[in-house]
Image (cartoon, rainbow, N blue to C red; front, side, top):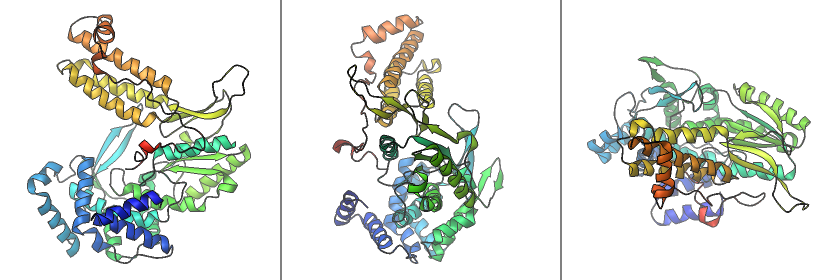
Length: 458
């Protein structure tokens, strides 16, 4: 744990944050004894302050109702304190039994296939969040530096910085892959073995098994499987990291290259073709030992060269380019990144959706506010890159779409709408300005500035 994290935890404990103090104590105990198995954790799951924190997290993340039809608003109307007290009693007395999750399918952006999403009931999401609060610090003590996804105090840009640094060192052979159906394919028995390396509390282990066995309700039919920690469950990302930690700890950076894992997406930075081929073979073997396999369509080896091909990772396209400079001056080669084609298309699709003809009755200021909210979030992620050119395109596209929208509202042409937006309005109707939004990363320098130190936290 970093000094900053330790200081925050200590400060929280001083000011009466019992949940944070509990997590800090669990982390320190696990870190001090890597072989320790924790036998008294279930009672901490139904601690009233832990359940309250779990409710706050579930409420913040919103989400739909599960198969019982209970919504977050229903819980608030019933009384949050009353609801949590009853939940604590059921957990204490062994009367809590998870319900099946509601299975829905959501479209994958730009693709015909759809991604399965499991929606547990609100009560189950609260309990899962409480279990995560208790278990996460125990396993965080073991997780390695190569793992970045769904971890506190770690962000996608921390993983991206490693790619930049490794490329600068000369490691420009890239193995890219992701794990096929990872969340659905993790074997329950092997996952529980991984959990039991650190946890011996029978009640908590039984609760985890109950969540895994609960299954999903799809088209009125209950489906149970011996594999999978379904996407949509609050605890699923932690369980995925617990299981894939077995891969992380068997990886040899010196022999097979620098592994960077963000949940089920993996990149290995290698120094030669031979090392890259050995890395891919090693990944395949390790995943097979875990009952998993790389997704063939997303698995390849890329050699980064000037004017050569690049690769996509965590929404960015990465490509080796030469820095701009004076003619004749020596200019540095570096790994640049900007929003991938798919990421840009998703942004365009969302902006088009917000400014669609079907919304002509919505006031223009509301449309602008919604477009700005989306673009601000999108830019907030992609600003840490060499994204100025793509930002110019998105900025122009938002103005074109608003011009078309205003033209339709007044039954005039796009050109008329463009004149109104760009020339007649002194601030272009308040559309967000992306000039100067980019923060270009540099090799071997922290991507966070002092003013953005908290942006990587969840």
